[in-house]
Amino acid sequence: NRMPIAEFENAKLTVKREGNRTVYEAAIPWSEITNNEISPEGLDRIGISLLVNDNNGAERKGALEYGGGIIGVKDTSQFKRLNVIRAK
Image 1 (cartoon, rainbow, N blue to C red):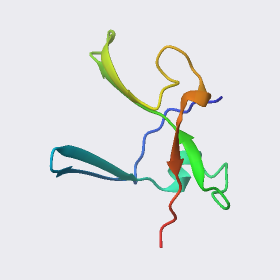
Image 2: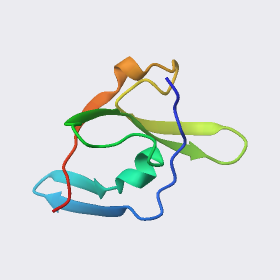
Image 3: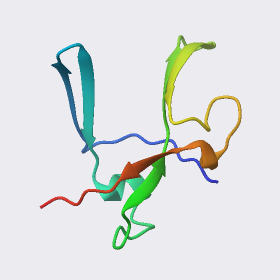
Image 4: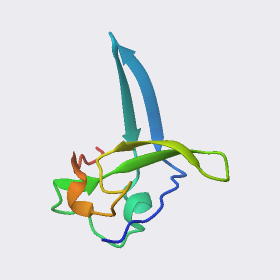
């Protein structure tokens, strides 16, 4: 249940509008997700949760969370499943 704080240096991020939806896409090198501690071979899905804080330095004013398991209680069983797609 270790939850690292991630700062990605080589991720590719895209935000686009499709009709009335906003689509966020992220391509994150495996080495930045796991520090090469886990091999991606044979993995089809991983658990993921994302949190963005609105913090003025003194306290959290608000937060946006996708997946669960970070705000309130630290629980990796609440993470969403993310399909692993290998680069070609």
